[in-house]
Length: 304
Image (cartoon, rainbow, N blue to C red; front, side):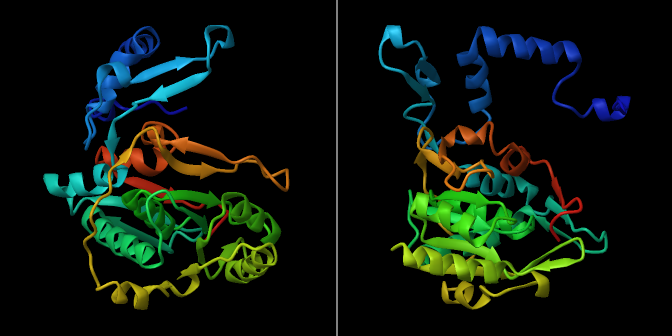
């Protein structure tokens, strides 16, 4: 284990290990105050009320089981991650570094560029009939366009479901059928080691399987990853070429993403996460962006 240097330590949000443990104790002893302070770091369309931060009952003897998290508050994580940082003068700061299997295959994008592309893609989703509460599946490699698609969904209040790019047509179809998902974002292909996997061919078969079971996928949006060219350029231009998109606020206790974690069963249980994913589940995707810290995605010997 390599310890941080004194200079690196001076740039952290915590002054010492003692400070970390103090915050840890506070999160256990006074969770409302702890999470209230965390919530204060974000923009809220409808403010967080102190008494609504966390309420729950997990004892059946005391009545109905329930968990309420930031009930009544509304925000938009895309606005927090992108618009706010651009407005605060960080538009030229790098938001994401990306590196493929080959270090020569790399890319980067700043906050301003990312916001523009997310807005345009959000408009594309809307042009395909996607609205607040609808589900969009992503069957993609670990590329910047995956982050773009997730943020675009968050911007318009759609639910995103990221499906592992190694699943078969049948497994992908199971997930679309279970969530009644009719819009899918994918890529033409991906290298795993030296083997080229034709993702679009897998998706084509998935669409046929869904059709046989009366689910009609209405839109498949393809990133030409191997050509480093978005095949969506034409539809992006048809969306008035707009690099602006209004932000939809949504209740924080509503669904943010659909997770189907099991790779072992043909019909894994779907789990819908609420807007608390702003603080937890999507840390690697959104948290660094939200606080203005550059993120790095590296595909370690998997997708390229």
